Amino acid sequence: MDALLGFLFGVAIGFVLERGQFCMASAFRDFFLFRHTHILRAVMLYLALLTPAFFLFHSAGLIETYPYIKDAGLFTAVGGVIFGIGMVLAGGCASGTLYRIGEGYVTSLVALVGMLIGIGAFGESYSWVKEVLIDTTSMGKLTLAEVAGISQSVAVLFGTASFAALYLWMKRNFKN
Amino acid sequence: MRYLSPTTAAILLALLNLSLYITLDRPWSITTGESHFVAYVENLFFPEHVANNAYFQRYIPELNWRVYLNFGIIFGAFIGAYLGGDFKVRIPRVKMRFLQVFIGGLLMGYGARLAIGCNIGHIMSGVPQLAISSIIAFIAIAAGAYIGGKILMRVV
Image 1 (tube, one colour):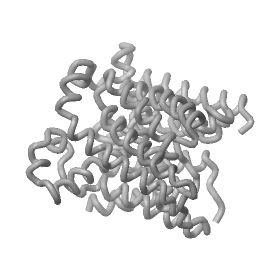
Image 2 (image 1 turned 45 degrees about the horizontal axis):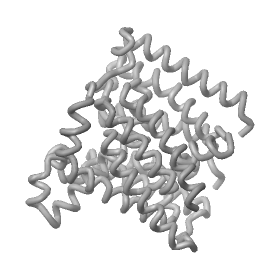
Image 3 (image 1 turned 120 degrees about the horizontal axis):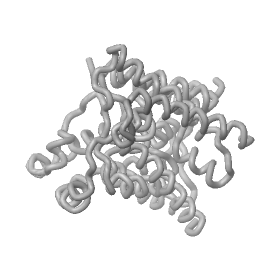
Image 4 (image 1 turned 180 degrees about the vertical axis):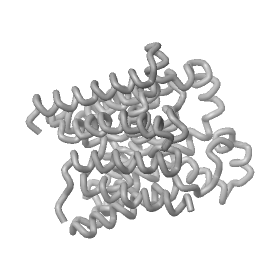
């Protein structure tokens, strides 16, 4: 049942990603090279909508496990930079690679094979990386609210306002 | 069929991720499912090796809903491209492109698992929960994309 639900959610998401040409690698490329923010500001709108929605649906009892988040540490920053470089070279982010395979891009299929091998390589080096970088720098599953010493509701208000402000700023100051 | 604007796509994706979170109690991710898939494929050939690998004890070899979601994305994108008249098998003329995207893929796979999440798990699902890890990852991925752009300009 879960497998079928997962597949159906995937089909809907894939359809929207492809029809919207919604890719994070394109978003950053367009911003850094052409100062276009049409995708990046759509991401900000997405965050401005979903930040309060997750919180409100959790408060209403419709989402059980919230926040569902990961450990933070130096490895987050190092991994993020490696991923960012990779997605530009691969010509698509994790989701962009998948939807472009559906469009018939052979290069995206090669990129996906590379990704899977990269994941396997991480699995092989995991014990060592865990000892050297993960266990030594992990701060645990931190939220902005915990770090700032405020309640999640105030943090959500602050986050929503920040994403909305970034969206409006980009919309006003960039043509595309 | 016409394209959706990025704004419309963003609103629809927000609705879909919210529905997914309500239905399966987990927000959208991609490389977690891919890790289970890698474990599953490796397990077909080297079951003993996988059984002794600490990482694949966490990301066990199974085709769970996260794996099917990823297959679904490819299929849904195919439907979108086909209905829009945009489906076409595209092979690059410059063969070096294969090497470039393969190396890019390797870095993406390794980097995503080191950061415990890709652009989806972090930017699309962790940032709207205001996770420190995801806010760090968002900035780091942006920095990486900037560096990657510089590398591309120099090499290609």
